Image 1 (cartoon, rainbow, N blue to C red):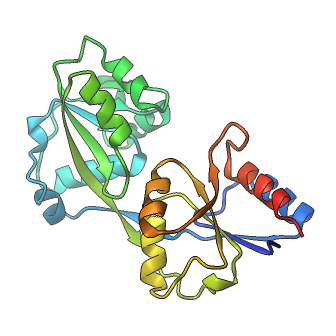
Image 2 (image 1 turned 90 degrees about the vertical axis):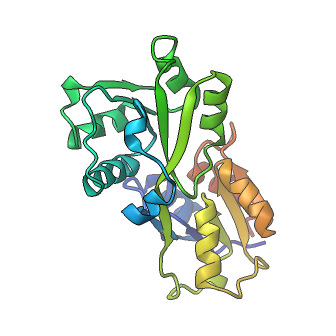
Length: 248
C-alpha cells in the first residue's frame, strides 16, 4: 500500500523534529488531532460511586488532571482533606503538581518512577496499613495498578474522578486517511460517535499502548502495527517502520 496521509489522535507535540523527518523522507502528510478531551466528573457523577473520601488515609495519583478533579470535588462536596492524608504519585512530576493545591513541604508525599510496582515500593511495609483511594479515568484500564495492590495485600478502592469526552471531528474527512494512530479506547468511541458509518476498510491502525489492544479487538478493528516495542519505543519510530515497510 502507498501511505499519503496519517492522522495521530493526539495534540501535536512541541518537538516536531521526528515527524518533520518522516514527512520529508516519505512525502507523507501527518496531521495531529485529539479525538477526545478529559473532563472532571460532576459532583453528582462522583456521588453515584457511593464513596466517602474521608474514609481513606492515602490517595494514589497517576495524572495531573485527576489531581485537579480530586481537589475540585473536595471543594464542591465541602470535604476538608486532613493534613494527615498521604499522597502516593506515579512520578515526581505528578507529585510536584500537588503544590497547586496544598503546601507541599507540610504533607506526606511519595512518588515512584512511573510504574505501579514503583508505587508499591514506596508504600513498602511502613504504609501498608493505610486505606488507599486510587484515582482513575473512567476510560482507562487500571488492571496493572490494582493487580499490584492486590498482590501486596493492600486495602484499596478505585474511583473515577475524570472522564473522556469526544471531540467534534465532523470536519475531518476521515476516509481520506491511510493510517490512524490511536492510543485509547476513548479514541474509538469518538470515531464511532463522529462517524456512525465508519468502517475500518481502507485505513490501517497503528496502536500505542497496551490498553488500546483489547478495545481494538472488541471493536473488530485490525491492528496493522502495534507499539511500543523494543524496535519501536515511540510513535514516530513506529510510523517510520510502518512507512518503510509500505513505501510505494
